Length: 166
Image (cartoon, rainbow, N blue to C red; front, side, top):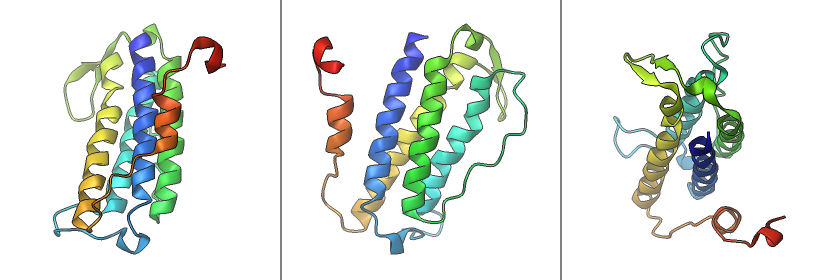
């Protein structure tokens, strides 16, 4: 499914950028919230990990064993960055390997039935949504810089001729 290969690419880049930006939040602010009802940087990172784990069984098919193991709960932002990159890579690889088995109805845990090939795209939206939350928290903490992950941009966006791409 060519569309899911594009989703995998975007997921990898989004996870890299999110992990990169988490590095600019001081570890002593990992549990900081601008409001008691808000989420802390560590809680936001954990939500990304949870979403990738929650939707992963869809890629395994309706016969996949349930329940899956609970997703890792990172204790630090450094650990969260590592886990986000690992679970995003595993999810992206599963997206790339997916095929016509996703042309099926998928009952959702919150109700309703979606197309499985579309349901597996929700974690991508989740990554970008939470990426924005982290950038906002950075600004509330006084960080006014844009922290572009130059290595990720180089790896994911720069055009190379086929003979250069290897």
